[in-house]
Amino acid sequence: MVERCPDKTEADGPIPSTPTRPRSKPRYLSTPNHPYPMNNNPGNLYIVGTPIGNLGDISNRAIETLKNVGLIACEDTRVSQKLLKHFDIKNKLISLHEHSNKNVIDKIISIMNDGTDVAYISDAGTPGISDPGYMLVKEVNEKFGGEFIKSIPGPSAITSALSISPVRIDKFTFIGFLPHKKGRQTELKEAINREETTILFESTHRILKLMKEIDTLAPERTIIVFKELTKMHEQFFLGIASEITKKLESDKGLVKGEFVVFIC
Image 1 (tube, rainbow, N blue to C red):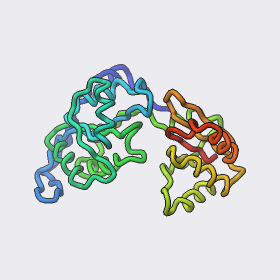
Image 2 (cartoon, rainbow, N blue to C red):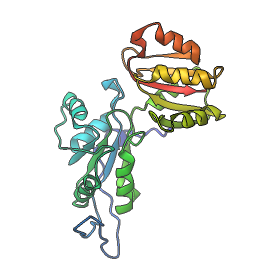
Image 3 (cartoon, rainbow, N blue to C red):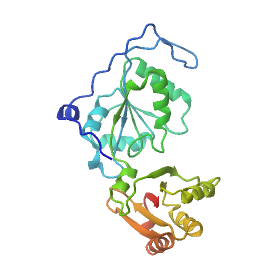
Image 4 (cartoon, one colour):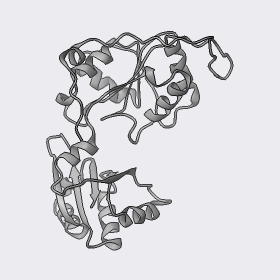
């Protein structure tokens, strides 16, 4: 995939000023108790990519954005505080995770309605992929429109794995994490039956289980397991599931970390 390279003004410049969007009359937000006039010039929502392991992978634009917004929404404030501290970013945080109630998003919408820019970051990588970022984007789009949602691209485990894949992959389906229990076998069978490559995430606790499941269902299917992308112990394994299982079981250290799995 070829992405447009921004010119120097775009790459190095400050956060752009909020665009204007004329309306014939004020609209009203549907918050639980207090509908209020919608600002014609709300703040922007910046979806900011952060490192998936190597802190050197963050962009200057991401750092400047996180410094300049009025509020940072994040999955886990404890995780995000470490990142912000490393780059000397002093800003307010609000937690937005998969178990957050609607009031959290309503609060963010209210803050944006006052004209304040807000950034959202996940625990690692580009938000909106297997994290609650999409819920915030959906609400902001419904309230203000897509012109107030900005992408600050960054690292992604998916594209990082694709870039070093020894197998050519022109088409793929990404399914995130498989369910732990209910529905796991159904989703895995669907993944195996696809003609195109299926990409999924797996944890250190279930990577061996996944390899054994694939070996049972599709013993001849080519598998690539990427481990600890961008980190010190980054590596990948290519082969059928039984071969990769044998490799992982040969060294307990190999099953530690975070994994991206290609079912080719």
